[in-house]
Length: 259
Length: 342
Image (tube, rainbow over all chains, first blue to last red; front, side, top):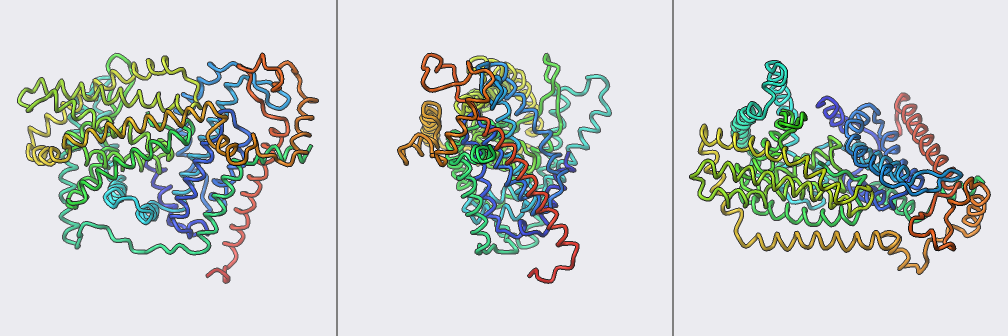
């Protein structure tokens, strides 16, 4: 589980035109992109297809391998499917799809899946071409309060250590549990207590170590971002295309032209 | 029960972003004076991740659940620190784990952070009183956990229904979500009791110190502001969602207002020809919806034209080809020695 996340995280250290963009440009572009996709009416499927350009641009121009991205998207799918699958059951009105007539519920279900792929894909690809530390720098440069950014940074820093500690604890517990015994909340409660207290100790050690190294309440960034012309151009291009695809039925025009 | 971007409308998403952003910023300002807590809170955020790895069985359902952590942290750290910790956890889950959406982040902070920290904790404190009676404080934790979780589940339902993308009927969805989360809430409450009890027994200082600062972190006056914010959130969500459902949709509605036209004309000829094609190709003309026959209007929905379908497929192909092209060019360039690159 943590394996994919770690690889996704490390991809941010790569070098490509997409990696070199300022994180602020990528964050704002991501928000505009997701808001545009989410603003489509319930039954839009076809009109969402042009939006695949953005994750695909990040993947291709950023040189990201597909596996870590898919490795995160697929485990997250069940929730969207679970809620979306009620649509075909509940919404039986006929809906014209070109020459065919479908249950409207299936159309909205397809729309939910398309939205899911687009929004989750865009977030993961953005992280993959930015890296978490730069992302945090971008957030604080965009005015997110400092304690909040620091919280995200520090949690991320100790995430993998504690995740593997949690994994070890769970494995040890599972090995000692036969049948269903030992998987109950009493055991889990004791495990959380131990983990919590170990975490408190760790926090104290880390704080002391940071103080030894001159920590004064802020984590200085090694590089300061400069928002130059290529960043502005990228941001403008993504925002304009996202809004344009929303306002102009591009796919209808393409299809009409072909007919 | 993380909300996904796929199920949310921008009105609901941005409304809750505004509310949760305000709450998180207020909590952050409260903590800014004490920088020594930052490393500890960072590690505790990672603790939530580790704790969520350890699942436990929910009695009577045969399924397993994991700790939410909001109530536990707010009892141990105080509500502001807990809200910030949960916000950090949810942000990382959204960015790195594809768990919950970015547009839905505000909703998730509200559902999983605000309720346990600012509704659950006062409930616990009210029931537990001065904390002398162990059974009272245990009951308080279970009640706080159940209420916090049920409110979160209710919120998920409300946000989904207001967004209008999922079709789940409000009543049934709420019974379903409420029913599922009741045993989870009880068990999470029991786990919280066990952890808090253990920590106070082994390391009372950890709890005393945090609850002392917690008292100051939640003055009575702020509950009024919070109630106002809650009403504001529901109001904004309700009004915007009404527009989104009553009007064609929020954005289209504003475009109509701005341009005075129902739909942006995409070069009239094209649209007319597309309609023509649709007329010709329609296999079941009964099901083609024209604005003119008003009888069938309530259940009828405007369909997608054939050119729309063809265009979508062509667009998808073009986008994929372009991506493959860019990747190929990049690979070609990186294999040849680059001298032009700065």
